Figure: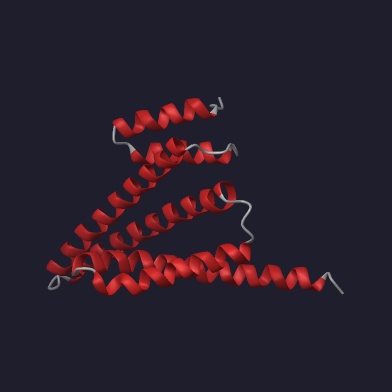
Amino acid sequence: MTMDKSELVQKAKLAEQAEHYDDMAAAMKAVTEQGHELSNEVRNLLSVAYKNVVGACRSSWRVISSIEQKTERNEKKQQMGKEYQEKIEAELQDIYNMFWSCWTNVLFPMLHNQKACSLAKTAFDEAIAELDTLNEESYKDSMLIMQLLRDNLTLWMSVNQGDEGDAGEGEN
């Protein structure tokens, strides 16, 4: 059964109250996929959902990182910690990709890919410039996210360049 926008928004609000942010994010993703113009309330719900989902993953990553540092003398435990940390990083990447999909494909479909890449690169560069102002813990968390963003930005720019090459081939 497919839910309409108002039902999905209500589900997201209920998930927020229950602190089930994964469910909230899924409901908000479904809202964006319906292609409706989003009100401020709905955009705020989308933001809250992803902020909390990412925040929970970042918190888990910090805990595992701390445990991994404390188990330096036990290679087996350290390896388990590293593998779990990589699992969390993959989850963060999936969350980011889902949010980016909402952002580029639904919320701002009128942006040309090249312009979107340019805006993303500018925002990335500005964020990198601010990293030196952070304390050590925030710096580590931010660096992880920035690495994921950099990887995606590199991918998008290469895809965009490929699209331009394909478009140019048909013009002759």
